Picture 1 (cartoon, rainbow over the protein chains, first blue to last red):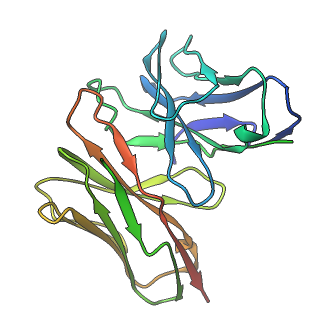
Picture 2: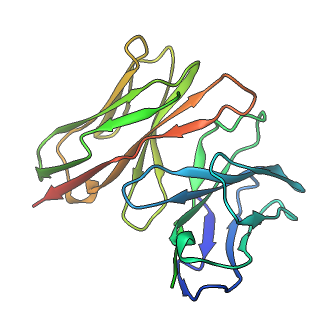
Length: 116
Length: 114
Protein backbone atom coordinates (compact mmCIF):
# COMPACT_ATOMS: atom_id res chain seq x y z
CA UNK A 1 0.00 0.00 0.00
CA UNK A 2 1.33 3.42 -0.99
CA UNK A 3 2.27 5.90 1.73
CA UNK A 4 0.17 8.78 0.54
CA UNK A 5 -2.41 10.37 2.79
CA UNK A 6 -5.31 12.71 2.34
CA UNK A 7 -7.34 14.60 4.92
CA UNK A 8 -10.13 15.03 5.50
CA UNK A 9 -11.67 11.91 3.91
CA UNK A 10 -15.11 13.52 3.88
CA UNK A 11 -16.07 17.19 4.06
CA UNK A 12 -19.47 18.85 3.98
CA UNK A 13 -19.42 22.64 3.98
CA UNK A 14 -21.56 25.61 3.05
CA UNK A 15 -21.20 27.81 0.00
CA UNK A 16 -18.59 30.54 0.24
CA UNK A 17 -16.32 28.81 2.73
CA UNK A 18 -12.58 28.57 2.19
CA UNK A 19 -11.25 25.03 2.36
CA UNK A 20 -7.90 23.30 2.10
CA UNK A 21 -7.56 19.64 1.19
CA UNK A 22 -4.38 18.13 2.54
CA UNK A 23 -2.15 15.62 0.75
CA UNK A 24 1.13 14.24 1.99
CA UNK A 25 3.42 11.41 0.95
CA UNK A 26 6.39 9.82 2.68
CA UNK A 27 7.94 8.14 -0.37
CA UNK A 28 10.18 11.02 -1.39
CA UNK A 29 8.38 11.34 -4.72
CA UNK A 30 9.08 14.53 -6.61
CA UNK A 31 5.98 14.57 -8.82
CA UNK A 32 2.55 15.05 -7.28
CA UNK A 33 -0.91 15.45 -8.79
CA UNK A 34 -4.48 16.40 -8.01
CA UNK A 35 -7.38 14.78 -9.84
CA UNK A 36 -11.11 15.40 -9.75
CA UNK A 37 -13.46 12.46 -10.20
CA UNK A 38 -17.25 12.45 -10.42
CA UNK A 39 -19.24 9.19 -10.00
CA UNK A 40 -18.96 6.95 -13.04
CA UNK A 41 -16.66 9.38 -14.80
CA UNK A 42 -12.98 9.42 -15.62
CA UNK A 43 -10.33 11.13 -13.52
CA UNK A 44 -9.44 14.63 -14.66
CA UNK A 45 -6.06 16.16 -13.88
CA UNK A 46 -6.49 19.61 -12.31
CA UNK A 47 -3.00 20.37 -10.94
CA UNK A 48 0.46 18.83 -10.91
CA UNK A 49 3.90 19.58 -9.57
CA UNK A 50 7.36 18.47 -10.67
CA UNK A 51 8.88 19.38 -7.32
CA UNK A 52 9.23 22.10 -4.69
CA UNK A 53 8.06 25.52 -5.92
CA UNK A 54 6.79 23.97 -9.17
CA UNK A 55 3.04 23.90 -9.88
CA UNK A 56 1.13 23.63 -13.14
CA UNK A 57 -2.52 23.58 -14.14
CA UNK A 58 -3.87 20.33 -15.56
CA UNK A 59 -6.27 19.52 -18.34
CA UNK A 60 -9.46 20.42 -16.48
CA UNK A 61 -9.96 24.03 -15.57
CA UNK A 62 -10.33 24.42 -11.83
CA UNK A 63 -10.89 27.37 -9.52
CA UNK A 64 -8.68 25.71 -6.94
CA UNK A 65 -5.04 26.59 -6.27
CA UNK A 66 -2.14 24.50 -5.04
CA UNK A 67 1.24 25.05 -3.43
CA UNK A 68 4.37 22.93 -3.08
CA UNK A 69 6.58 24.35 -0.36
CA UNK A 70 7.80 20.96 0.85
CA UNK A 71 8.44 17.80 -1.18
CA UNK A 72 6.05 15.71 0.88
CA UNK A 73 3.14 18.14 1.02
CA UNK A 74 0.80 19.28 -1.79
CA UNK A 75 -2.31 21.04 -0.43
CA UNK A 76 -5.23 22.16 -2.60
CA UNK A 77 -7.23 25.26 -1.66
CA UNK A 78 -10.64 26.55 -2.69
CA UNK A 79 -11.05 30.21 -1.69
CA UNK A 80 -14.84 30.19 -1.97
CA UNK A 81 -16.52 26.82 -2.31
CA UNK A 82 -19.61 26.41 -4.50
CA UNK A 83 -22.00 23.48 -5.08
CA UNK A 84 -20.32 22.93 -8.48
CA UNK A 85 -17.14 21.98 -6.57
CA UNK A 86 -18.87 18.92 -5.11
CA UNK A 87 -16.74 15.97 -6.22
CA UNK A 88 -14.12 13.43 -5.21
CA UNK A 89 -10.57 14.81 -5.11
CA UNK A 90 -7.70 12.37 -5.48
CA UNK A 91 -4.05 13.13 -4.80
CA UNK A 92 -1.27 11.06 -6.36
CA UNK A 93 2.51 10.97 -6.54
CA UNK A 94 5.12 9.28 -8.70
CA UNK A 95 8.76 8.36 -8.27
CA UNK A 96 11.72 10.51 -9.38
CA UNK A 97 12.54 10.22 -13.03
CA UNK A 98 12.24 12.27 -16.13
CA UNK A 99 9.68 15.05 -16.42
CA UNK A 100 7.07 12.82 -18.06
CA UNK A 101 3.83 12.38 -16.17
CA UNK A 102 3.53 8.79 -17.34
CA UNK A 103 5.37 7.18 -14.44
CA UNK A 104 3.25 4.88 -12.31
CA UNK A 105 1.19 7.05 -9.98
CA UNK A 106 0.30 6.07 -6.43
CA UNK A 107 -3.02 7.42 -5.24
CA UNK A 108 -4.27 8.55 -1.88
CA UNK A 109 -7.71 7.47 -0.58
CA UNK A 110 -9.37 10.67 -1.76
CA UNK A 111 -11.47 13.43 -0.20
CA UNK A 112 -15.17 13.46 -0.93
CA UNK A 113 -16.27 17.10 -0.87
CA UNK A 114 -19.90 18.19 -0.69
CA UNK A 115 -20.74 21.88 -0.90
CA UNK A 116 -24.27 22.76 0.14
CA UNK B 1 -8.69 13.20 -30.11
CA UNK B 2 -7.02 10.95 -27.55
CA UNK B 3 -9.64 8.81 -25.87
CA UNK B 4 -9.99 5.66 -23.79
CA UNK B 5 -13.25 3.71 -23.97
CA UNK B 6 -14.11 0.85 -21.65
CA UNK B 7 -16.78 -1.81 -21.83
CA UNK B 8 -18.95 -2.96 -20.33
CA UNK B 9 -19.84 -0.02 -18.11
CA UNK B 10 -20.90 -2.43 -15.37
CA UNK B 11 -20.81 -6.19 -14.87
CA UNK B 12 -22.25 -8.59 -12.30
CA UNK B 13 -20.82 -12.09 -11.94
CA UNK B 14 -21.03 -14.91 -9.42
CA UNK B 15 -18.13 -15.70 -7.14
CA UNK B 16 -15.72 -18.17 -8.72
CA UNK B 17 -16.55 -17.21 -12.30
CA UNK B 18 -14.15 -15.62 -14.79
CA UNK B 19 -14.71 -12.34 -16.59
CA UNK B 20 -13.03 -10.13 -19.19
CA UNK B 21 -13.08 -6.35 -19.30
CA UNK B 22 -12.33 -4.42 -22.50
CA UNK B 23 -10.45 -1.22 -23.25
CA UNK B 24 -10.15 0.53 -26.64
CA UNK B 25 -7.98 3.58 -27.06
CA UNK B 26 -7.06 6.15 -29.68
CA UNK B 27 -4.09 7.63 -27.81
CA UNK B 28 -1.17 8.27 -30.12
CA UNK B 29 1.76 8.02 -30.03
CA UNK B 30 1.35 5.23 -27.51
CA UNK B 31 3.68 4.84 -24.54
CA UNK B 32 2.12 2.37 -22.12
CA UNK B 33 -1.19 1.06 -20.79
CA UNK B 34 -2.11 0.40 -17.18
CA UNK B 35 -5.03 -1.23 -15.47
CA UNK B 36 -5.98 0.16 -12.07
CA UNK B 37 -8.39 -1.22 -9.48
CA UNK B 38 -10.41 1.31 -7.49
CA UNK B 39 -12.36 0.13 -4.48
CA UNK B 40 -15.36 2.22 -3.47
CA UNK B 41 -14.23 5.31 -1.58
CA UNK B 42 -10.55 4.61 -2.19
CA UNK B 43 -7.88 5.71 -4.62
CA UNK B 44 -6.91 3.58 -7.65
CA UNK B 45 -4.21 0.92 -7.23
CA UNK B 46 -2.07 -0.20 -10.17
CA UNK B 47 -2.56 -3.82 -11.28
CA UNK B 48 -0.50 -4.11 -14.46
CA UNK B 49 1.49 -1.98 -16.88
CA UNK B 50 2.34 -2.88 -20.48
CA UNK B 51 4.53 -1.16 -23.02
CA UNK B 52 4.26 -1.35 -26.80
CA UNK B 53 6.33 -4.54 -27.04
CA UNK B 54 4.40 -6.49 -24.39
CA UNK B 55 1.18 -8.31 -25.27
CA UNK B 56 0.40 -9.96 -21.94
CA UNK B 57 1.09 -9.32 -18.28
CA UNK B 58 -0.16 -11.22 -15.24
CA UNK B 59 -0.59 -10.25 -11.61
CA UNK B 60 -2.03 -13.17 -9.67
CA UNK B 61 -5.55 -13.83 -10.90
CA UNK B 62 -5.41 -10.74 -13.15
CA UNK B 63 -4.11 -11.09 -16.72
CA UNK B 64 -3.94 -8.11 -19.04
CA UNK B 65 -3.45 -8.34 -22.80
CA UNK B 66 -2.51 -5.65 -25.28
CA UNK B 67 -2.89 -5.51 -29.06
CA UNK B 68 -1.09 -2.35 -30.05
CA UNK B 69 -2.08 -2.78 -33.71
CA UNK B 70 -5.81 -2.69 -33.01
CA UNK B 71 -5.35 -0.45 -29.95
CA UNK B 72 -7.22 -2.82 -27.70
CA UNK B 73 -6.55 -4.22 -24.25
CA UNK B 74 -8.39 -6.62 -22.02
CA UNK B 75 -8.24 -7.52 -18.35
CA UNK B 76 -9.15 -11.11 -17.52
CA UNK B 77 -10.03 -12.00 -13.95
CA UNK B 78 -9.90 -15.68 -13.06
CA UNK B 79 -11.86 -17.37 -10.26
CA UNK B 80 -13.41 -14.14 -9.06
CA UNK B 81 -13.66 -13.34 -5.37
CA UNK B 82 -15.97 -11.00 -3.47
CA UNK B 83 -13.00 -8.67 -2.94
CA UNK B 84 -12.73 -8.22 -6.71
CA UNK B 85 -15.82 -6.01 -6.55
CA UNK B 86 -14.48 -2.62 -7.63
CA UNK B 87 -14.10 -0.26 -10.57
CA UNK B 88 -11.38 -1.25 -13.04
CA UNK B 89 -9.84 1.66 -14.88
CA UNK B 90 -7.81 1.53 -18.09
CA UNK B 91 -5.17 4.28 -18.31
CA UNK B 92 -3.11 5.02 -21.42
CA UNK B 93 -0.13 7.35 -21.58
CA UNK B 94 1.31 9.02 -24.64
CA UNK B 95 4.86 9.87 -25.53
CA UNK B 96 4.01 12.78 -27.76
CA UNK B 97 5.36 15.36 -25.39
CA UNK B 98 7.71 15.68 -22.48
CA UNK B 99 4.68 15.52 -20.20
CA UNK B 100 3.67 11.97 -21.22
CA UNK B 101 0.05 12.59 -20.31
CA UNK B 102 -2.30 9.98 -18.90
CA UNK B 103 -5.73 9.35 -20.42
CA UNK B 104 -8.25 7.66 -18.16
CA UNK B 105 -11.23 5.51 -19.10
CA UNK B 106 -14.44 5.78 -17.09
CA UNK B 107 -13.96 2.33 -15.65
CA UNK B 108 -15.95 -0.89 -15.54
CA UNK B 109 -17.85 -1.37 -12.29
CA UNK B 110 -17.54 -5.07 -11.39
CA UNK B 111 -19.77 -6.62 -8.75
CA UNK B 112 -19.11 -10.15 -7.56
CA UNK B 113 -22.05 -11.88 -5.87
CA UNK B 114 -21.72 -14.83 -3.50
